[in-house]
Image (spheres, rainbow, N blue to C red):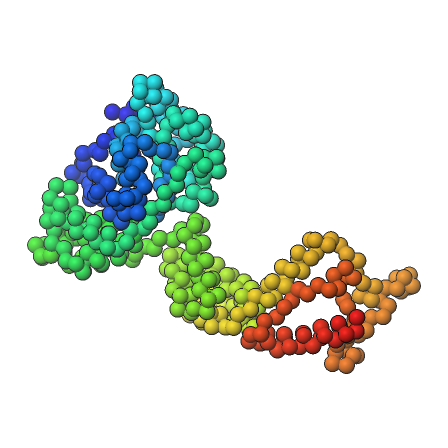
Length: 447
């Protein structure tokens, strides 16, 4: 048995016997790699983790994937296959002291010829000092680190530790795999529900509501069966109504300050940019249904209206800004209506990033060339001394010129040949492009 101060998630390296009173999701944990579903790329016949398990040589590794995809179970099975002792800590509760204690036990085990796997669940929750404390022990092989995280390791794990580990990505489970798992749990006589009648449609509904999470699928099945068995038709097959009642409102996988939030936001912007209103509406709905701040969505559309639509449709910025103000004032659920209007307008608008790119070119010129002097004819001349020095001399007032155009260059001399704004021949910007080309020809002819 592990020492009392070990924060064990699975206290033995061998697959534990199940507790009949434990939740169904815990009882149905796979006992071998063959029982795992939905991760064939890693643990299938030619999967790399199956090969490592068979070889018995397990490197330090990080398992990255969404909740309920099998990270903890896979860590246990790999440690068992490699015949490793297991020290298990949850990063939510463990600090440097707990890590040092676990490492010290691992060092004693190593002296007795036994290797240790240090399993750290929620690895991304360790701060830098805690991660730093792991480095020498992973480096020397005192422990084989198996980290599990729902967050992108490249953002959440320090580079020195990341370089010492292999990262394996687990995917959210497809509905077919979840349906298979639900059927298995329903008919399993020992660890499961002992022969619950489950139709294909009901299993598919559970798999859909679980949203890629095996733990959620099994918990939903267990709750639905408990509800059904408390009713008058307890002997009939599990109906869809029981599943709907147990599911309530499905929570979407979407963390407002983590990677998935930015993945969905990225998909939204890129769908707008691709002029795909249907996809843009879908990703906007995903953010709103997951509880995202609707004003975040509105801010992104204001930026998009200038960055990606720009002068091809100058009305886009006004509509996006009005949408932000409208949603700020009326909130949800009615705010979805102006959001939908803005999404469809922006997606269908002609696109131009010319103004956005022009601003970047001008900024780069300032950074490269420094503070170049303002041409004399553009300088303000409020005093006689300034006028004597030539400030404002030869300035031509455009409103007094033919067609309100003056050909005198206005950039610093060192940048007179630079062009920042290159309008596109799209939407309203095509007229700007024609007008600007004419002005630039006149300036070239006069210079």
